[in-house]
Length: 179
Image (cartoon, rainbow, N blue to C red; front, side):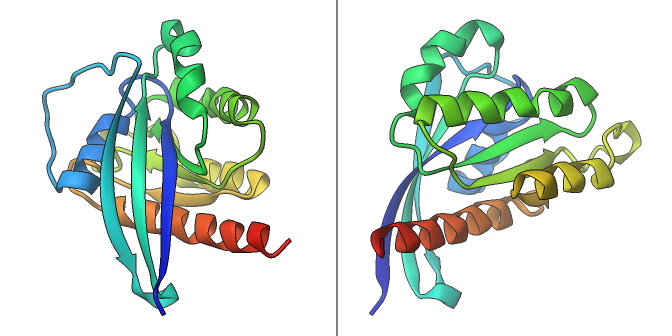
């Protein structure tokens, strides 16, 4: 029998790292080149099948504003989140240096650690890349996160990031329910 899961996830990271673009690419298979800053939060829903573990997942993806001035507003949007995608822009080192702060903000506001996929976004901008793959992978390994390199523009590895997160959340959900 196919298992049904419903998860709220949060999209984390500095402004303009591609959280909205990644969410739009995943939920609508579309890329909007016209950048629009997220004010507070926005969300999208997608239902997906994960055949290798015989599961249906409904994901509620909360895209949180990345600018520091929205920190207070973001706090309430973390409630009930079961996982997160933590994005940084491979062309802007500062966004990589800030991922620790995002991880801490999420864990504090949720009240526990949650499964995280670390996403190195904008890999299509090869000539502008300043954060190498080795640094991203090392950070992910050190924190027990899954690491994915993606491009919301081309769609490369976008679905993979969400599928990996779903598998982690399902595994955690099953472990928690067997306690």
